[in-house]
Image (cartoon, rainbow, N blue to C red; front, side):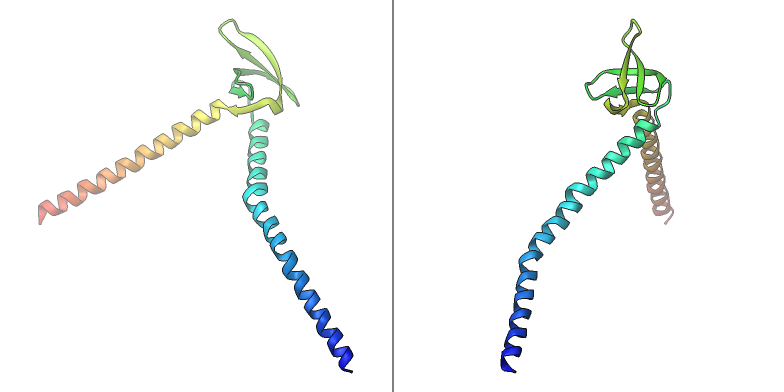
Length: 135
C-alpha cells in the first residue's frame, strides 16, 4: 500500500515539475503573440483594406517610392500616371504602400479637429476670464 502512495506522489511531482518546465515556454509564446504577431496581422489587414479601397483618381505611392495617379484598376494590377509627361506604369496591387489621397484627407480632418479643439479651449479660457472680471 505504501508503494502505491509513493508512486502516486511521484507521478504528481513529475506532473507538476513538467508543468513548471513548460510554463515559461508557453508564457514566451503568449508574449510573442501579443507583441509581434497580433500587431503585424492588424497592420496587414489595414494595408489590404487600403489597397482594396483604391479609387480611380487617387494619388498613390508604391513600395519603391514612385508616386502617381490611378488611371485604371483591375483585380490585381493598377495603371498609374506619373510625371509631367503623363507616362503610365502598370503595377501590382501588393506594391502599393500608401494612398496619399486618403492620407491627405485624414491629415486635413485631424487638423480641422485640432483647430476646433483649440478654439473650444480658447473660448473656455475667455469665459473663465470674463467670470473672474465680473466678480
